[in-house]
Length: 177
View 1 (cartoon, rainbow, N blue to C red):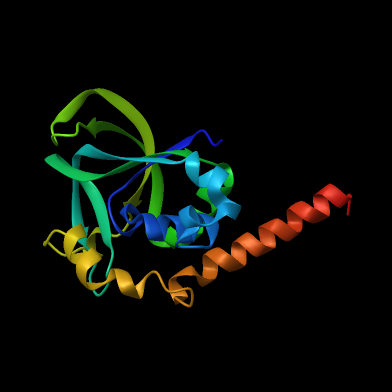
View 2 (view 1 turned 60 degrees about the vertical axis):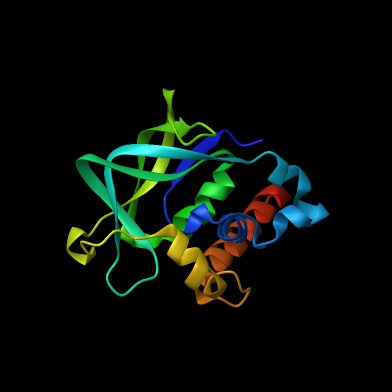
């Protein structure tokens, strides 16, 4: 089981996209090959204070920036491995920096819990590329998710290629090459 945690506030809130990035299969939770790994991942609603989520100009995904007094709702994910984070870094690309933050979990009624949890999140680097308008997850799920879960999506090419190279290097290291 992995000991890495993350806070996701955009496309990765969709379990299908998270699984596609980490496992190469949007329906990994329905495949016995991945059942042990997917059972080790937990996804719960959470809130990040003093940040704001924005649309990225010309894109279907958001970015966050620090903004005192604002908050971003998203998901707190536990059980991630170093390999998962490697793939997530490739997926997010050079537009984001992975940073440590503290989030609070949301209770079933939507209220905020008392305890803070450490997580890593991806903060957008280029403020000038963010729209003023907030990005809406529900709108994304309704109108854009179908573009992101197909196995042929170009969004995953870099992730898949990097993971394949990393796997070959690991095999070579085990073989003593």
